Amino acid sequence: MGGSQSSLTEEELLCYQNNPFADRLCALFSSKKDGKLSFEDFLDMASVLSDSAPIKVKADYSFVLYDEDEDGMLSRQDIAAVVSRLTGRNQLAPEQMTFLLDKVMAETDLDEDSLLSRAEYEHVVRKVPDFCK
Ligand SMILES: [Ca+2]
Ligand SMILES: [Ca+2]
Image (cartoon, rainbow, N blue to C red; front, side, top):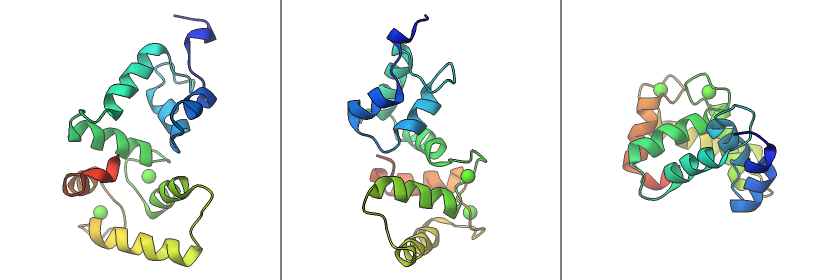
């Protein structure tokens, strides 16, 4: 392959589906790790994002997607970043964010280490499949 014509840029992806995680998706699915998606990368991504993908696959990819600092755990900071992407221009006030993070952690952090491991995350996703849509 070669030539940027066959790749989708971040902007194109944003236009394509207006996904608040477009830059993370590009970083994740870019096989050349240059943030650009080839047509094959795009198909990979589409199959993972499709409703028919197994929940385990969705849980795996969304965990990596949300783990912005890529340390293998979801911290309050990672989750705050997810929330702020999802809320876009209607950002939560700091105290609302703290309240929300407290609630999320209380429900999900089973071993109370203030971090969400992959297993804990998968547990949530299985209980609330909409969580990783
Ligand atoms: Ca992390
Ligand atoms: Ca934990």
